[in-house]
Length: 339
Image 1: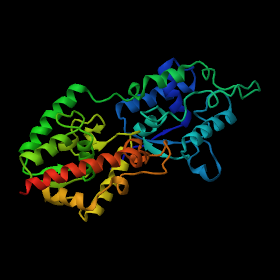
Image 2 (image 1 turned 120 degrees about the vertical axis):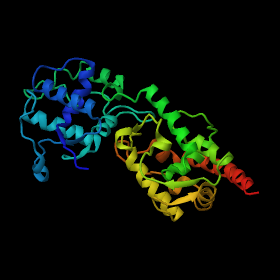
Image 3 (image 1 turned 45 degrees about the horizontal axis):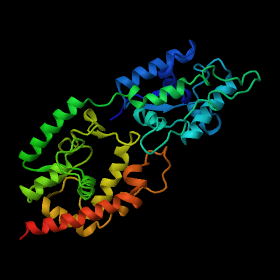
Image 4 (image 1 turned 180 degrees about the vertical axis):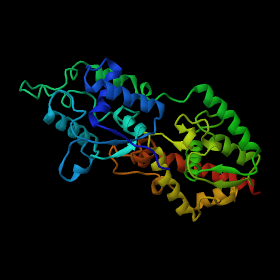
């Protein structure tokens, strides 16, 4: 699906956060940043291209000086490149706005790569042209960070998610076939090994397992793409209009898409395949004895779209043990169903 791309200077991302903590200087910053914030609030997943006057091999994307702030051309170039370097982004990088901003805000178990505006927006120098932004030491950027990414991208409403929970669980119980994306088969086992049981508000995996263990062990299960409604309807990180996953820094769908394909490869199956639940899980338990081969994401830095602290980088330390425990317990229960 082709979409219009919003071109943004890297410094404007920081200005948007700074504006949450206090008003911006009334120069080129204010109008551009308010337009950016309005666009993101209207469509959190709008594609945003980061452009700056980098020159050399990146001359193709140089935007010119039209949105330079009054501190000077060299200062503007340095600030943009400093931000890109800190975030491990390149000039011309294009990502959904949600991903860009979640990468800047601190998340659970991941500090922000840019905790302060000092050293990026203000250098503490007195030489002409290098004084930096007058707000660099105001604390407004830091106060904006403290408000969280929800100040720019509102979360899903609790009432909406509760309604979706009830409707999707009822649909799953009455459906001729159950729809689930492949890697969630493993997530359900991890949850089971960790003691999660229904009711569980963030997703329908415990309800799915309970159903196939008690009422419908032979229920047909279809393997589908993306954050399908039947399992993910109540998830706070689901983007309903796109059927997409926005966990982690917003790019959860990317890591999860690869995880789905890793699981399909291990099972020798494909999207669209249908198999009875008990038979499907027997294949899962036979072919996937640990999630280290499907879910680990070693070597990704926290600003990477592939970064996955909860089930990726942490997998070698914690998650695979939950899977192995749940696998052992569920193998016994599924075996009992066959007697």
